[in-house]
Image 1 (cartoon, rainbow, N blue to C red):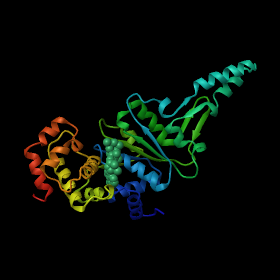
Image 2 (image 1 turned 90 degrees about the vertical axis):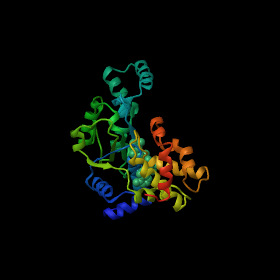
Image 3 (image 1 turned 135 degrees about the vertical axis):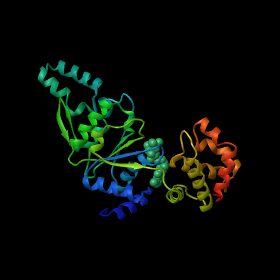
Image 4 (image 1 turned 180 degrees about the vertical axis):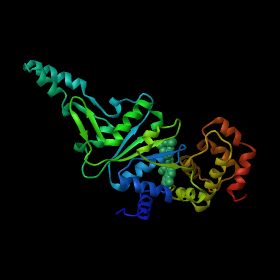
Length: 298
Ligand SMILES: Nc1ncnc2c1ncn2[C@@H]1O[C@H](COP(=O)(O)OP(=O)(O)OP(=O)(O)O)[C@@H](O)[C@H]1O
Ligand SMILES: [Mg+2]
């Protein structure tokens, strides 16, 4: 049972997510108040993972909508199965059906294709457990889509002109994420509980590395975390996220490195930094410095 923030924090941890007290509190409130959770933060800090972990933790279905420019209602909400409708229409014509009957038959649930948003609220598609609806990277979608979402997140209902209104029996657990490539409207944010996920402090990130890198030695985990934390202080275009930290730990284990030194950092820099300018900045003097820091120099 999740009846306290502490127990939620523990359940998240058991499902593989290390949440600080602030994040755990906001997730707790979102669950208890039935409000969408809006998570913003840099790339790779664990936004998407919150939704995945919640679905594991609650034993609920994860319904994911990946946003992109041009995302429309037909992809996000519902569509009609045109080809099957036409076949059925031919059949109806052959039997001499009238117009009203045709419309009723053709625009029925049988030919309705439920896309993620409809799936998430459709009582017919969901059993007792509320599904987790992840609306990922909302900042990539157009503003029109955002307005549509605004309505959906207020009432948890969708009106299909030919069919009527479909309303959620109980609101899904909604997680909306943004990388803040643009500001999302206040109106949308106002309907949600908001949390900015920052890069984790050293101790938290070290614990995440231990949690997510089976078989890693405490020594290597410390060194990996120190280097990444230090890199984030350098003036880089794209500082590494937690995703890169975990990839790097895995990479070092894959090549059998037991320690972080200058050569290892240079050889594996492509796991941490994905921009040539950033890599160039770091190579040379900075790598030497990072290697020293990995071993505890300040
Ligand atoms: N607090 C955490 N506890 C456990 N794992 C974490 C945590 N934070 C990040 N991770 C891990 O880091 C990786 C990246 O997380 P995720 O994909 O959720 O990031 P994101 O913020 O959605 O990134 P992007 O903006 O690139 O989509 C995942 O493998 C996730 O398991
Ligand atoms: Mg993500």
